[in-house]
Amino acid sequence: MSKPQDVLPHWDMQTVFPDLESAEFTAAFHSLMQEITDLVAMFDAHGINRVESIAVDEQLAATFEAVTNRMNEILTAVNTMRSYLYGFLTTDSRNETAQARFSELQPYFSKLDLLGTRFTAWIGSLDIEALIACSPLAADHAYVLHKARQGALHLMPPSEEALASELRLTGASSWERMFTDFTSQISVTLELDGQTQTLPLTAVQNLAFRPERDVRERAHQAVLQTLEAASVPLAAALNAIKGETLTLCRRRGWQTPLDMALFDNALDRPTLDAMMAACRDAYPHFQRYLKARAKLMGLPVLAWYDQLAPLGQSNQSYTYTDATQFVARQFASYSPQLAGLAQRAFAENWIDAEPRDGKSGGAFCMLLREDESRILLNFEPTFTGVSTLAHELGHAYHNVALAQRTPLQKYMPMTLAETASTFCQKIVENAALATAVPQDQLIILDGLLEYATRVVLGATSNFLFEQSVFEKRTQRELSAAEFCALEVEAQKETRGDAIHPDHFHPYRWAYVPHYYFATYYNFPYIFGLLFGLGLYAQYQAAPDDFRAGYDDLLSSTGLGDAADLAARFGLDIRQKAFWQASLDVLRADVDRFEQLTMVN
Image (cartoon, rainbow, N blue to C red; front, top):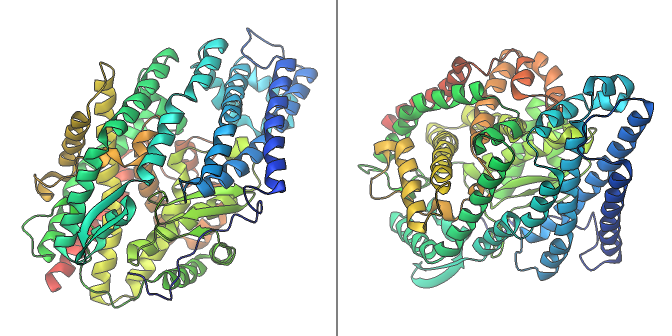
């Protein structure tokens, strides 16, 4: 556990508004609603919607520039307001004021989403090349316009898109919020340290880091029982979200939800197929890691709850303070700019690190405004906690690189959103390995392989689960028991016999937030890890050349398809060989881990 003097910070949202009841917040809140209403009127006045064909002339170019500039201004304000409210909702789901304000804004966000659809439909009606020739602003947004032109081919008639946008408020959006609020307030009762305790779900899940196997097993069983009791509303939420996705995909002319996800992630099918094929080939290497872990723990085979158990006592301290200092030092070895970002995040209280009741689980980074981010952690004093801190700070650095782009240019696929985070994580991991004694090397390698296994095997398992859910959901709704069976089936396919057949996790689907978005919030993590490893290899081969182009790459992640951006660094991601090379880096880590287990 964390040292008593090592106080875990809460983030500071007062840099935006004093509080939710302040006059400043109230004024900005109502102003934003009016600005969105005015933007609707502007769209109506200029006929921004699907039309048969429009001639591109100076007047149309002027209309485009006026509409685009106003959209960018309002999207900037919306992002800040949304992130500010998320700052309260994700750290205290019982905050009724934040819940009420967010609920009030939902119809306006829905209006804005519909305007985005109308803008896409309008762009699809234009001669894009003629517009780019007439307007410098259009030239700056060329990729955005070409992407919109493709997206326009998958839109329903305007009246149906408007209806879908309104119904989403009482459909998938409501189910997503129900899932978040419900799971953040789940409490688990178990026998712990000689007494019966009731703790938040995330706190009990963190007991997977405890060294005592009986504690881990009791915590796991208590979580399973609690999630089973909560499974009916969660199954309803998952059925509703996936059902809505299937309906809209069909009406919009997508062959499958996966096709829609690939378009949204600026990825083509050859790239996905090459990556997933390489991952399938690599299953045995990650299974070797899990089996070596079992051997080191004196077990014939791991249970699910053994995967995070500490492997002995580290000689290095990983309190939160130690973690921040270590990350800042290693970031400085790359560049003053990266180190400065970390120091700024710590000094300005960008990070909320304490696990507590009502707080969302996991970790994320969100842009707050301009080049300023906020990072949510549920910090545990292990090297995994250090690595996660570096990962999320990488996202914040990416936000700095994007700061000069417009909101329309900043929209990037999740595949490329993991680029800087994975790179920063690797900097810290390699530095820790280089200075550690063998016992600590083992622990650090275990941490990075646990993360890699969670991404390559875990996200692949999530992908397979979601494929099965979509396939079966086309016929009917699924029961909680059926979700459990599909979950275990996917876990077994990726982890094989490295996990005891009776000790998988049938209720992962009931708390993993990635499933409760529209579609396939999983394979981008695989892409991010392996693409980041490929970039790190480029950095090691030619550090100065890499630094010269890296920030430009990060700044351009909303301005091109993944394959085109990768080609800037001489990477052909449509070839299986690229992904195999990245996976070979992890295979070497598995080899090294196995060797260290023989020594210990």
